Image 1 (cartoon, rainbow, N blue to C red):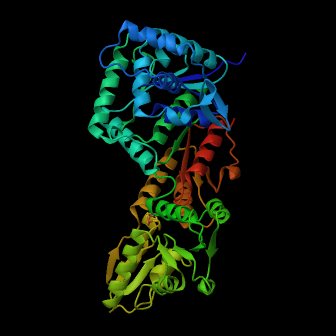
Image 2: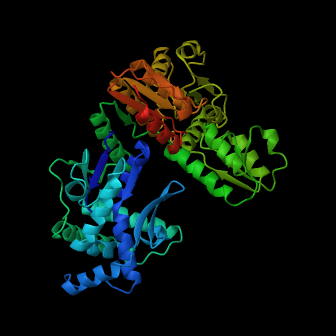
Length: 523
Ligand code: F3S
């Protein structure tokens, strides 16, 4: 008989257990059992029945009152449309169980032995029926003492308070009801510390790390990094290759800002166009098209758009085109990345001061072509060694060199060196964006250790092409794919590590799909 695989994640409140457990379960196709939600549902039931939080220690009368009232509470977990819902007497109470008030009551209720016993029985029954990821306070020690993987996930009180504060702030921004106490960082921290004390000192199932649990301190880690660490524990247990996803994979700050702006604007319902595809990713462009966002490709297509909103994408455009767009539409949203704008300023200023502008970049790339258009005198794009060798400029005119933000850093230095060796008077502005530099460095580092490297990105994305180039140089089995559907992975069982990175235009959901498929690929 196939053995069920159980992953137990314990830790204090606010360590991110449920988000991470959910992510791990999704990737492995396991059932996620949200034990905290079960206690929260019980707490909600009690609050609704008029019982309030005791001011001091728990009295015997209070405990008995809780047990007696909960006799009428039927709590279940179910999957509805792929979402786990908590049913309280048949009602989906997911929207009501995440408040601080419910949270506090849940912590009090979970300290009552009779309540815990009943919940544990329920949780063990769920775990015995399939592969599960379960999170709580005593899963590894009490509920699933035989779980194959046990993790104790923690983070400092300050970090947890800050996370809770930011969550509450987001809730308020989204129009949800949030009390002033929920937005008081000091009060939240105090509350978390008190809850830690209660959870670690309760008589039944106190919060403690199981002796065979792996400790993960998430204070300095992202959700994805923690999930990946747990998934790699699973890979180790199963004798499968570990998977490392680059921290820098996916949308950079400039692309995220541009894509968010278009999605926000699409909600308004007025005619909206982007000048050129907003990013080099057909999936996103298609999704936006379905939401009514069309793409304009030429200046001629600007005609007749007086009522429209036109978005300039993060690559930017020439000065002339920018003015034309602004004049031809009702509203222009300029999402040119600030790093690209900085290059426009350098090019405009230095060309006006009499320097010849050299752009180290790709011919035909929208960003590089945009830079050319900010120069007051004819600028030149240099893409490779041959062009640097053949460049025939007036040696009396100083050169101002800038880089396309996504250009390969090593190649940029090589091309600059050629110009210098040829005795040109060169001022170098290494304008390769940090996000690109970090992404390239990290991709190279992972690829150099990996047996297989997967680079995800659009077919026409130049920064993705460069990532592929960098990885391929050090990892022969490097694959370039656009989506998980393109992945044709063959493992021979000798692989220890698979690396994943993605270009700046790759949305998170595509990266997650690829991670999932890689983790599930059989030998
Ligand atoms: Fe901007 Fe750098 Fe991204 S220039 S658009 S943050 S790659």
